[in-house]
Length: 490
Image (cartoon, rainbow, N blue to C red):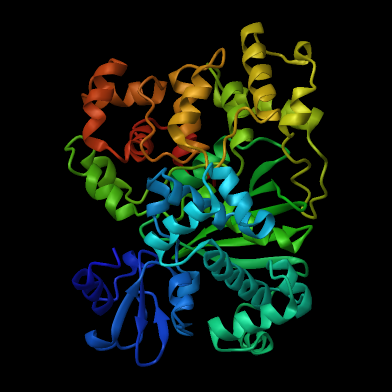
């Protein structure tokens, strides 16, 4: 979008927050870059130039605005819609892969050479993988500086910097303040932490956001031991590269309140990324709803509760296992089966609040279980054990960087994987916004009540007009039934 100067200028002059994250405005006279909704007086048009990423602005020598904090704006929704190499690379960079594995690790995961990835990112985003990772490290450093009491030297390494000197130089260059000055400013404001060891932050999103189906779904399907709804917050345990964590997510006007407790602060970047992915916070709800409103049968559903998101997962392998356990059984039964696995094979954790007890079992741990110990039909046992074996040996990978169509083909080749299981994994684990569930019982009931075609083939053909947002259409269709997934718990 940053190449459409006229459209960008209109967005900046109207301070349209819907475009935050789509592009960034750099001011040639002040050498500062802002988000489109910056509250300051818009600069003259001749002094504006536009970039596709904060990293490109920083690489061009611009500093982040202290008023609108463009480095904390929602991520571009484009990376959630696309499944090409650039989109997959951006999702991996957002997960901190470059910091942990370097550019060779990023390229290996994508199946391209490092040079090819560099070329593709430069062409689309105006910055290579190192610059993009550097911008993310700067944002993580700012969060740690402002929301924790960690010594600044520890902040540097926790944010992914290789040295304190690089950390100091980057923070000064990006924010025009030294790390100590950033902490002093934050101490005068509302960001000071209330609980030692807890990182409290706000997760921004594009309005509108309807929390009912999002948090209602997560709470209704929560597996005891690893998830719970408590005091208006969804809480769960997280398995992370350097340790584990516990997160509490609370819907608030204009943001999601996030409280993270981590055993290793180096996991902050990925923990935030997983929480944003879980809640689908980088979606563009206006674009989605505008498309679905073109169907007169969906229009009343969209008007009744605009801004529905797709509830996702923090771990693709975990969700695939839970999807198999949920085949042809009720939500309560699926939770019971999953809770037994968690108790028997999950790693115990300490929760100061007492509600969470385990991490979800790894694929390697589940690959060693005795199939006869599972209270499942024999065919379902075969499906589950085949799945966890493929996940454990790496022949099947289900991550944010996974190619959607390839994953569908690999899942379909496993015994017991029908269209419903494959598509629900594509929707919630892989993040495909166009995944569709025509055989789902709730969708069939909604189709009958709304006058949509009844057979899966006819309904799929009818749903072609909803593309590429059929996964969001599923969320609206599910509201036709009065099911707990559609309501925030009281």
